[in-house]
Image (tube, rainbow over all chains, first blue to last red; front, side, top):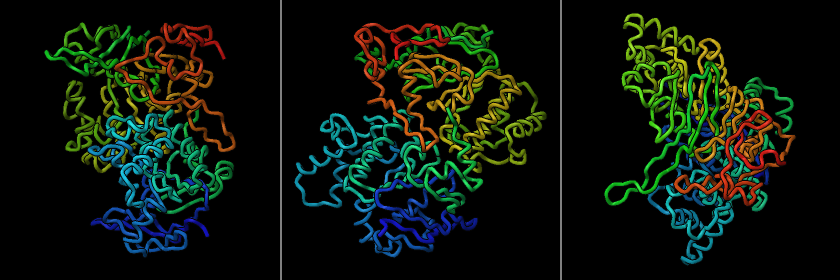
Length: 261
Length: 321
């Protein structure tokens, strides 16, 4: 069974001026251990699609139809209590801006342990601390014991994104959704984070859904690609094939837009 | 002839103050930078966050005063002339900022935004402004019907076009482009870069282009200066970026994602982050992260010198493989 299968998903936004079809009849599937990229320009619906998977679509957006099958279970119909068990443990997410996604008034340790505690309660303080240190180690943060007591503003952008990844990995999810994980970062740090994601993916055997607008990043990381435009999937295929023989005009345009050195 | 000359610019920002308000520690944002921009050319400034590239840009257009060093714009020393003279010069240097959502006033209509510099510098009367504004919008490929609209009605790419229209309103000699495309997606990025190229040919304006993305810089610029911790470490023609010699430039080049899935290249992934700019490492500032570090690098800072390959490089072992 595929770990994630989306069938005919539609998410619409209702406003005074009409309906915006952010995600319009999208179907896709993901195999175990794969890195799948969802590529599109701004406004193509890629972020709303990723939010829909965990049913985090903000008001006035609504999933109006379709199925999201996670291990055969339809997340669209699942009651909130059941969904909470999957968020973070089954499917986890990292967001675009590490600057705004961490809470500035809690320490890194606090926030890491919070995401741990939601799914494994009843451990002692020491066990939680040890686990948090191990997570920070895993994402390559030096001196993790000291960093547990640090506040987000004391860390650089790259470090914060590593902490976000550590939080997302806290419960060893099957699927990690990474929404533009490197857009706000410098190229050198971007390279580090992408290497890290690939390495972690092999280590804990997870599936990654990578959301990006940059085909340069896709080429270096993804096995398979879905191209989105105006809420619809316009093209899909193996990364190598898409680069060699793109069929859709929109894909060609995105490929041509990648600046080369 | 050079339009802008920077001579040995140093800029310190005080961070910690003592009991009597005397500054005790400083952020060394810029640490002795000399460079020039010629008329009508575009120079790229590249580096990681915190390397001082934006500070240099702001000093170049007179938004910051350097702690020491000299800025000559069109032969005029920005820090010695009277405020009045400098204000007049400001018309010939304009800026496009990174974030198109905060650099346009949400309460001003597009027409007001674009014509504000014209009214401030009184190059044209109010009546001529309407026409000029339409012409400027057409130049940046926006339909002039939108003059009475407000910034929130536009997408990021369109807003950046509006910022560009404002910047060219006075037909400046120099435009500082501070990460103008970093917040846009690649397709829109490419359009804006095309537009900038076209405008440069038409207006013969010089660009000082600040970015962390080498790909963007090398596609638009004639020359590229790579900065690290407040210093230029390599200055070269943009076409030479791929054969750059400074280990830091090479690491930057190798972190650029290649748009070709069949090449799995060996990356020189830099370890760690940029060190604190309050305590800059002794000797070569890059030595703690450098792969080719030797003893001399910890003691002696290399000088930015013109090397036989035509690049200016600050490295003791620039010719080593």
